[in-house]
Length: 124
Image (cartoon, rainbow, N blue to C red; front, side, top):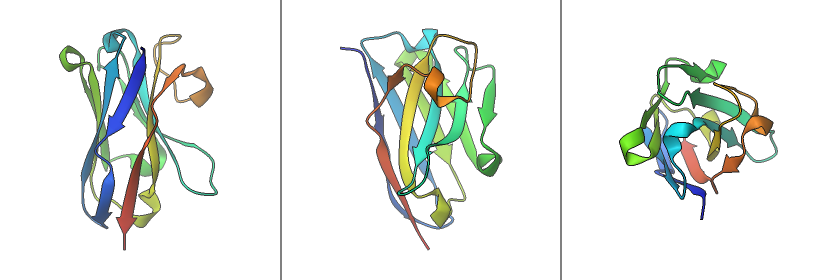
């Protein structure tokens, strides 16, 4: 069964850090570019970050630059999202997604495989 599974979410205070993981099973993740997206209650899904297949290129959402770092370990079939200096407005369900259509993209509908999401809650 092809799937992506996120983990690492939780409740932290503002200014804290979390590291999310996106583990793949049933597929070779190195053949996919992987993105992170988030969705807060009552808001549209928002692009967070993406990384190319080799990890040589990354793109970040504007409000994440300098605070979030996306990385991957293809030997472990896993992509990570390190989140520092967290703010209450970062509270959302975070999803990882994979696509093998284009080299790299920030567009959600170009991603074919989605995880179930992990909740991140930042208290003020």
